[in-house]
Image (cartoon, rainbow, N blue to C red; front, side, top):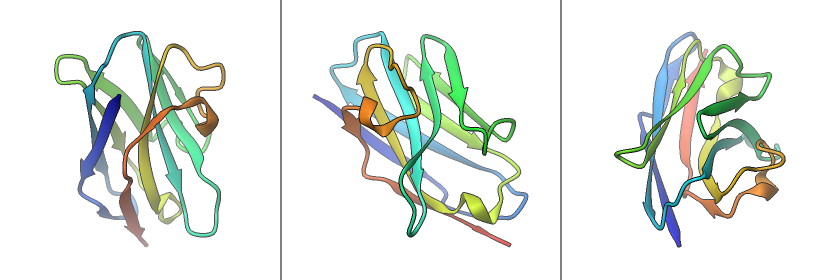
Length: 123
């Protein structure tokens, strides 16, 4: 089993920055794929970023603004969010799976999920 716990400051102004962290515990055996997802009120959960074997993939809506990274020693993945927009307001989830995902930004590909953390961007 794998446990994921997200943390980070959840409030920012438009144009500002936030960094989310996700600590993974349990049986982490590479190759592992980690992903960040978000769900805004009234909308479906969408993939934001994915990281596997040093390769990152981003949704078009965040490409160039968000950066996903991993600290292997700490079993922690990060989502650095810059130039935030009110449209980025959502609950953000960390997710993981063993092996490479065929569709890295599809929630159906992931087996483990964090509890979610609210991110609010004010205009």
